[in-house]
Image (cartoon, rainbow, N blue to C red; front, top):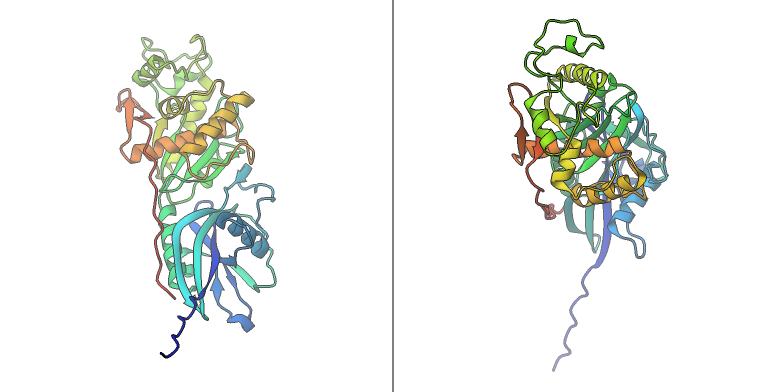
Length: 388
């Protein structure tokens, strides 16, 4: 019998990651970072790419490659752009993975992304000679591989409809806390602004809905003149300035917001500040909804004891980690009380657009949006790309 021929061994498998670094331009849309190879390696444009090291997870490899090729790493201090801080998340999976054969090797590549501050410096390694930020149209025209096209398409779709939350907390009179969720509900940006005037400029142009944890309207028969320290107007005196139907229904849920904890003093300066902030935001032509962070917390989570206390913030952030993708752990970055409420406000705005909310009060007078129920967690399968 002729000797049997042994089957050729399968090609070696090599695992790689690509990382799409993007920034949300103040007053504009997302921009994506591309790196240019030297002439000896083809002079092409590409996102951050690299392989795995021994015993590395895909997320760890993505964070390491990003730091090595651009200088953007987890060790860097939060950026500052229009606020006291603008810390913008970690690397996260885009939802695209694909494989292809190249030079007798089988390569499996997984796509990740990370949002960075607008003013992040880029420190190139020897692998690249140039770095530049591009719009989606500019970036898609410069990349060659189908898998990269698929990853950028999916990432850009998730960023074309953002939802924002603002909490102009009475405890932080300088400026509101802010948070941004992408179309899929992932937390991509948060911060505390220096002033209310910075809020409209902080919002990217792709924001669809803004949830504000503050009164955006006054009761029927009342005007801003009623908020003066010693009002001398001739407005209707039968209703207190906090007497909207929505506020009374909120009080039935155990939440008192427009007055002090005893209900004896109206937060006049805070209400007036909130109305002026709403005027600024309406010039952005975004959809404003009035929300309540505490009511959202009670509807979506087990209400942790305390709000501004250290333990209360820890418990709240740990609970939000299970609800909001991209939420940092308290060990990485413990958010302030107002920033945590801003995340809840953005989540409420997203649920409202999805039809998973209910209204308190009379919409003609001013309704408050609260979540209807805890949203179901949806998993998105990986999308295979075409071979290059």
